[in-house]
Length: 243
Ligand code: ADP
Ligand code: MG
Image 1 (cartoon, protein in one colour):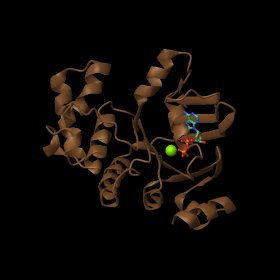
Image 2: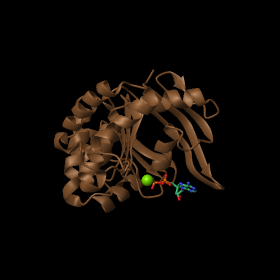
Image 3: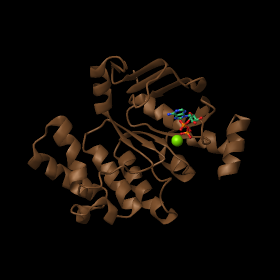
Image 4: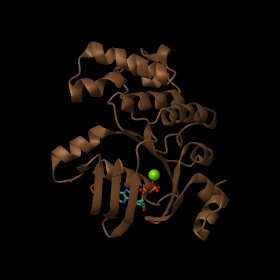
């Protein structure tokens, strides 16, 4: 059984069907890149996986746990297995970088401060920010803030990381430093689902690429297949526009 199994996921907003019937299996160590035009439903898909949006149909199973929106315990269990990084970094502005990384394990997992402080420092080193622990988010560049957001998500020991266009809000010269951290995570074996417009990253780091449009998975395959030899006309047209 895959680490994560999504079957026929459906989502409506009012009368609009935003996700039609999305099925996806994610194996341990997979890096899944989700690409597609704005409005395709990519963010909504990720959000349904951790119940930030309540799905309207289908099933989500993470490591054997069925995500049941009516059962708070299952929601919490699934959420604890996943870390999410958003386009806007969403750091707590009144907390230092170190505190931002420490706060969830302290509050949610009741982990001892001295233990998590050590771990948070290691995570900041991992994202290349050892020397910024005492800074406030506003004193950092966007790329640095996003790296803190990644460290913060990792502090909860997730088994799966979800990234929703993590570099889309960054100035072009800051994109590389964030992608580099993500690539390192992937190389270490982290299971990741990444919504991205960075086709170089998708091609190089992902082992599975999914092209979504209008709430459907139009095509999925290896990066070689999707980028070099897509079967679907719509995939071709999208890639021609974006690359
Ligand atoms: P993508 O991330 O691929 O750009 P989204 O998942 O953000 O797409 O949006 C898919 C569709 O759902 C869009 O038509 C968007 O307007 C709609 N949508 C997203 N969130 C909401 C919401 N909270 N309420 C109503 N409509 C929404
Ligand atoms: Mg989006």
